[in-house]
Length: 188
Image 1 (tube, rainbow, N blue to C red):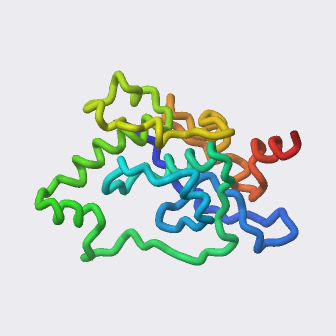
Image 2 (tube, helix red, strand yellow; image 1 turned 90 degrees about the vertical axis):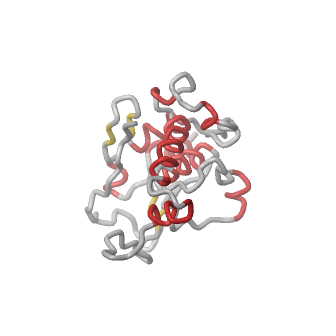
């Protein structure tokens, strides 16, 4: 399976608004730092068919929240940090293998769940005819993108091309402005 890795631009931008403390729109949620009203979980419940998922859930959750009508924001200042490079410390994917006493269990689960993630994100090679085992897509309609907005609008807004597997950083992310799609919907 081939996916797109969405990286950080590593850039800081000049604030174009009157208040630098105002949260900025963001393209994707961070599953390890997601804050919202409980109504968010009622409208977009976590997908129980993503067991032990460590990769892909943020893209699908971002899609589902956007399509359900939620706008995504990031704090205006850094308030939390995740240190990936903890040498000598046990990593998440190692704990899964420890729990199941199988060295490659996390890789096995990831290979299954990434098919579900790709299907829910609209990757053409993850349509039901290509997914094995097909059970990976069980109840995917219940945990897919449904709401007043469309999946393709999200993909276009964040610059993600699932067919060609490329992502371009949208100008609104770099400038700190509101995404054009959201701006247009407020003016109609």
